[in-house]
Image (cartoon, rainbow, N blue to C red; front, top):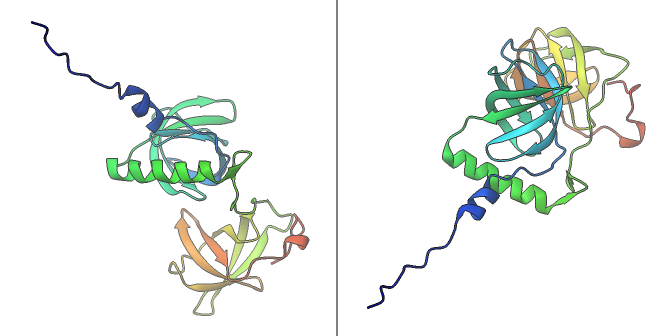
Length: 203
């Protein structure tokens, strides 16, 4: 008598696809273990890790916190370092990993040449780095612009207004988006004019 052999499907290719890295060039920032923050771009990314372009690259095993446009905050450990780039292995719950996989799938389906169609404008370093931050209580602080886009800025300043509070950078109104070591990131109330946006822009 012939015994029926159960038919099984190989799920390994599907599982591999869930962890495949996709090429996406997304701007962001990363914070190393010494709390210094630096700009970066993703080279490729999956739900378990990413390769990023940025300097300094940190040390293997060092904890790193990422803030990637279109994705948000990610945490992990530096797994490998290369010239002007490094690889990060993410540390997250399975549910957050699933959400990241869904976000990546959406970004890939809406991308052009590796960049999402609804991409934000690139950040630049301005020639005029000095600025004045005015907080909601009217106090003014000297600040240094780290980088700038038409939508927001990151700056070093000895003040930490509450997230969501309305501040002024020079003459430009903005809202505090997040805090980091020795500085804040803000989103402008009105986008800066794209036609006049270059290294000479003045807030």
